[in-house]
Length: 305
Image (tube, rainbow, N blue to C red; front, side):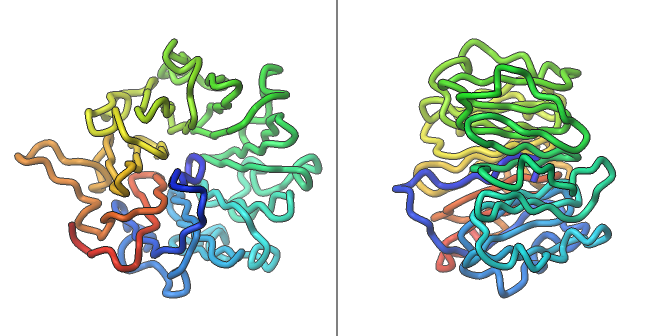
């Protein structure tokens, strides 16, 4: 997944569900590719070409395996508390230490010593990773530098294509590549923000139940639709589209639709493709990747909604 795992905001309970992907299935990461062992997962993470699920502390992976990213190392089969899927590389958090495997073009699968203990959150993207440790941000892979402003007091992180986001005192801090204005944090996102997510070249934030977006808008990913302006409890930015989890357990997606990952507005009424893949309420968690998404759904939810 290009950004952080997006979890339901309900009651803080860990809910077991069924991973249901939609969008791209070019690498077997979509419908029909989910291994039966993933039923009962407590978290999901959509990567570019490989998806992850977390079940009973063990990581389950499916999709492309050209770089060994779908071959879960023994260390990640138990005791894992968080997962994050990138472009052909994966991360897991276990006992405060990061485990990484898969593609290593930029050293993103080599965990620095500082990230082997005391880590409380992880995020990955195309080719770099972020970890949160003692309120400070660590970065490795294709992007290693972080600004001094994120050395303390940070409560959330998200890695994008070539930019990072941090949440500090309710305000968003952004750094890295700015080719599409993804670092130009709007005034509305400088206070009161509860969640963040970085896309490939765009950024989103959650404030008072509504999504704020900025940066690249070439596929409409930077224009927040009415459905994402209220009652949103969790967000995730994919490469060029976004997903929002609503308070009623439903999902809404917008932006790029090259693989039917978002709403198709060319028809009337519009077509919400995820509903054809069984992403039906109640949804516990949702994650966006590269033209793909995966949701953690109540196993009793219908397969068409």
